[in-house]
Amino acid sequence: MSITFVPTPAVQPFDASVDHAIQSIVSGASTDATCTTDLAAGPWDFDSRPGYGPGSSMGDVIPTGAPRQGELPAAYREASEAELDERIRTAKAALGDRAVILGHFYQREEVVRHADYVGDSFQLATAAKERPDAEAIVFCGVHFMAETADLLSGPDQAVILPNLAAGCSMADMADIDQVEDCWEQLAEVLGDLDAQDEDGRVPVIPVTYMNSSAAIKGFVGRHGGIVCTSSNAQTVLEWAFERGRRVLFFPDQHLGRNTAKAMGVPLEQMPMWNPRKALGGSSASELVDSRVILWHGFCSVHRRFTVDQIDQARAEHPGVRVIVHPECPMLVVDAADEAGSTDYIRRAIAAATTPTTFAIGTEINLVRRLAAQFPQHEIFCLDPVVCPCSTMYRIHPGYLAWVLEELVAGRTPNRITVTADVADPARIALERMLAAKPPVVTSAR
Image (cartoon, rainbow, N blue to C red; front, side, top):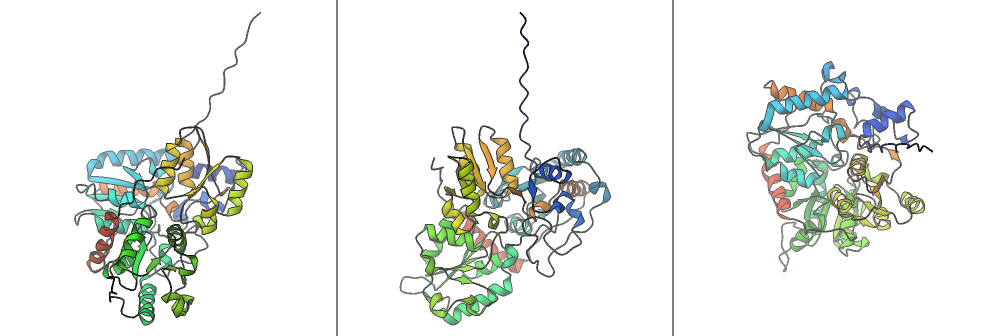
């Protein structure tokens, strides 16, 4: 009697590439859904048009005069993924220590694999200071991040954004003119905003999320305020409450509300400031009684997550652990098991010692990368529709190959610079942020 052994099929590793997933959807090879089939095209197809491009922010209104990217040479537009990968590696090797590549967690897998540092905005802000000898900092992220790197890097270092059209719709929801007008209206209600009370506190301290322009950071620095990230938002609010009776928090209302609520601030003491309305749409008495004044801004990625999605995840995956980003709406954060920054999410998954099912409420590129990195767990995005951050997705490996090869040739394209009148006060606000290190938080499970 002979026995035939049938080999067990090899388990294919999870493909972290969102681009591959979208191409499969568009070709019909996958039955998954995407928010727009335009994501299958190269971002250069949209560079000449006003707008944030296809993806989560495509419905947001872009300000007049927002930066646009010039035409990418055909050699990069027409190159295959493998060809671009090789060109990037070759150029990076030629540059050596002269260039450092920073990659945000939300970047494409095809870009992140080449980064010297990968992290959230807080970590990359720190990383920008740790390579003072690099001649060029290639920031694979969005415009406000490149501005921040320019503020924190040396005067002889060039900060490069591979695609100038990679902005941020949330950051654009609070421009400097609107914020200056808000400050003037608050002074009419609250009095001299520089006057200290008997406890040494001023009427209001401005706090801006990292997701804001350098001009906004400069405003905050001039007025005794501070920058925060999702990693240190509570630490920053504690700092602000020691110095002011109230906080003006912009541009993301959800991070401000969720953080302050967790600190015990009642919702009725968190009025919304809509810059298109007198007094932001609140009454003078509401502003006087406030603790946190929330700007009417949001992240279109995190606004896609819903309580219904959490309910469905729990119904289909008993025992699922739901972790969402604090830029999600309050009801979503309340319904989740945990909320934390992108780095918190990554660390929570890394710390899980037994196979766990995770439903994650943050940008799809990070979620898919985590699923590939931790195959012992089942990890999926709460939103079943593949819809990456519109602007992060504008950084394509074609642009990365182009800027690196330009640097090899002795040219410096797409340099991001902040003028001294803005940079000096903005650095003050950023240095305060970097000093406000959050306590080390470990996962609750």
